[in-house]
Length: 118
Image 1 (cartoon, rainbow, N blue to C red):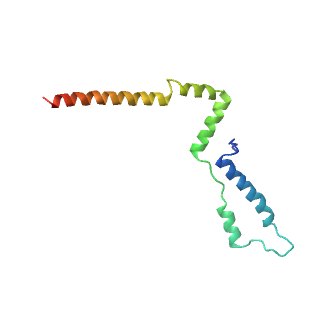
Image 2 (tube, rainbow, N blue to C red):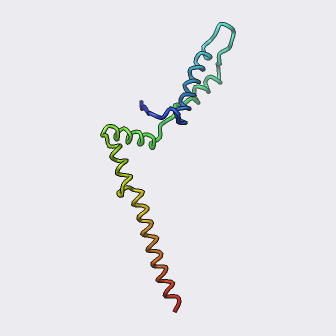
Image 3 (cartoon, rainbow, N blue to C red):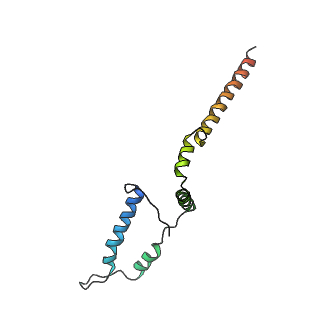
């Protein structure tokens, strides 16, 4: 069993609460009553049981949960956030490499254009 904490206003939390409401309101209706209301039987109830499979967790979701748990256990979440914001962060390195590539392209273009004119 995996527990996951989400913000109460997120879409995931709202859908979970709706599911819980459906399950709670659906449970009393499925019980037989004395008032003569029929309960579902036969093929429809069988199909309902078959199609109500548990939603499996994807590998990506499992890995994300494992990483979040590891960061929480080791207490490195804040340190990672600080490191990724700094000069050694992935985004900063990618931006730097793009700027260098663009400058190199401009230098090569200027050389090619200067050779074509004479």
